[in-house]
Image (cartoon, rainbow, N blue to C red; front, top):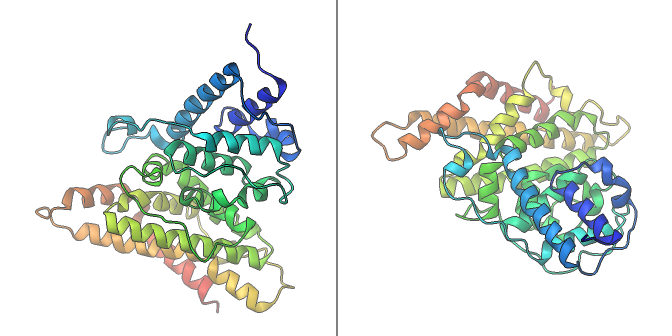
Length: 338
C-alpha cells in the first residue's frame, strides 16, 4: 500500500483547508505553530497534492459563483474553462504555510518566485481568505507576493489593510482577456459580494480610527483601479458584485452611525473625523454605479452597446434607485456630520 510521510500528510491537510475541502479550525494549530515541512514530495504525495489542488480549486471557483447562470448560461457554458496548471509557487506557498508560525508576523519570507498563472493566483487568494479574521491573518497579509496580487486586494482588501496600509504603487487592476482577475471577477460575483458586504457590516465593530481609515483607503484604491479598468474594457458588468454587496448592506434600515459606532472617543478628534470619512468609501462607490445605471438606461435599441447595457439594467434593477439614493444619503452623513 502506498503511503506518505507525516510531514507530507500535514502539507496535504493545509492544501485541503486552503481549497475549502476542510475548515480553518481543523488546521488552526498547524498554521499557528511551526511544523517541519518536506523539502520535496514523493510520487504518492505529489499525486495526491495535484489531485487536491485541481479538484479543490475547480470546486472553489464553482462554489464562489461559477455555478450561477448569466444570460441563461453557466460559466462553463459561456466558453471553455481555462486549464489549471499549478507551478512551483503553489507548492512553496503551502510549504511556507506549514513551516511558518503564521500567528507570528515575524516569520521568514516566502521563498521562490511569484506566478501570475490562474491556478497559482487563485490559490493565493484562497489562502488569504482562509486566514482572514483569524490570528494568522497578518502573517499571510504581510507577504509581498500577496500584497502585489490585484486579485488578493479585490477579494480581501480589509485583511490586507489591517496588516499594513496600501503601498504607494497600487497593483495593476487591468481586465485583460485571459487574466486571472478578469476570469475570477466573472466567476466569483456572489463570493465577492459577500466579502465586501461583510466589510461594511463589521466596520461598526472597529475601535481604532487608524484601522478604519486604512480599510477605507484600501477600498478606494481598489475601486479606483477597477472602475477605470471596467470602463476602458467595457466590462462594467464585472463590478456587479458591488451592487449585490450594496443590497446586502442596505437590507433594512441603516443609520450612518452603524459604520462608526465603536470608535474610541478617547482617540483624537482629527483621527475619528478622517475615519468617519473613509468609512463611506464603499457607499460613495455606489453613486458611480448609479450614474452607470442611468447611462445604461439611456442607450437606444439601435446603438451598438444596447444588448450589453440592457443586460446590466436587468441585472442591477433589483437594487432599485431607492437604495442608490439611500447609499448617497448615508455617505453624505458620514462625510459631513452635523
